Image 1 (cartoon, rainbow, N blue to C red):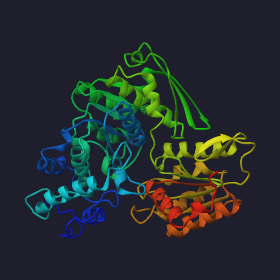
Image 2: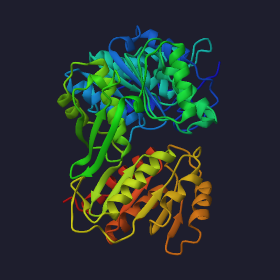
Image 3: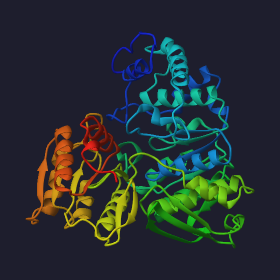
Image 4: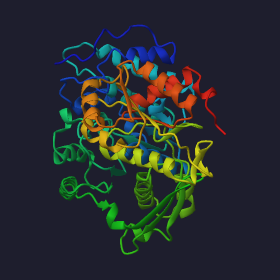
Length: 488
């Protein structure tokens, strides 16, 4: 049996939260680097059983997909909270603080609650570590176990779980959900999930349970076919968003993205709504409009008597870091963890539409009416994980930027700077007005980009990876750049 911790996990007692983080760091982390471990639900099942299966102590929603699952998870968590339920939210990765992964509707539990759960997990797990006859946990399996334990400890009513990678063999897949949600499928983690859309979709479809209703985003035909076959085989009701949505209108407003969702009265899901939904989302990109429709439909199905105004209020409170997050307004500085082709395109489209508009600018983290937008062409800092294909990313920025900084996502996630440089050079090679620099020193790159942006009042977009977004936020705060920009 493979041993998958990288060093002997510390025997030191958990005296504070940082002790637990150091203990976790002794285990293999698939977010950080690939590993040849054979995935199996046996491991998480074994350790959950030590705690009498804490994941069964509350009702839950389970979400898988290539993009949008974090936003949909935040929306469903906000809706459940608005309805009066004490709701846990489990998402990944974190941007600034490990605790972002395990929260009560996006808000940290108190330190004593985390510490109690951390100590309980370590105390129960340590006697099993290194034993050849027992399954050995990875970093993510231990984090997932901690979420299960903490949510039961805090007596939550509901929990919303986002898969980490894939679905079928993801550590979260021992939950028994009330609702399953599938967000759009794209190429990702191909070394684990497969190199075709149907193979990736099949892994995501592994979270579908017998008889449990499935709410599905708009999909490529080959992915949709996989989901329909799987739900039919398991007799799980399947609700596809194009079937129950008549129209979605959305636009940028002073408060964010204003959406109006019209449901089809002829569809059983659409018929649950007495009127269209109208809300202003604090999540800016256009795709969030459809994410909101999906979350609202799943919630209304489970709680048909919940009024439309409660749903609108809940959606207006859903937020996650590094989803088109504004660090500064003058100049406009945005970080976005987009890492698939469609999500990066949505990020770029939103960013450049703000800059190109004569009437849209930014104020205190939201959009407002202005006489004119900046004339300075923006700066782009870009990095993506080594398993991504940057060839499709570079054209999204052609002719739209003045300075291009290429780097790696950080020290945590492996990147391939040479591949990125090659892809962007091929696209930008004839662009004489673009200054391109590349360096693996992401700290220096980010400092230089922030400094230039503020000094020249030049817009800045940082995207391509959640890990890059996390590093950007860290550098921005640690170097005091928030004090140099303007937040009118």
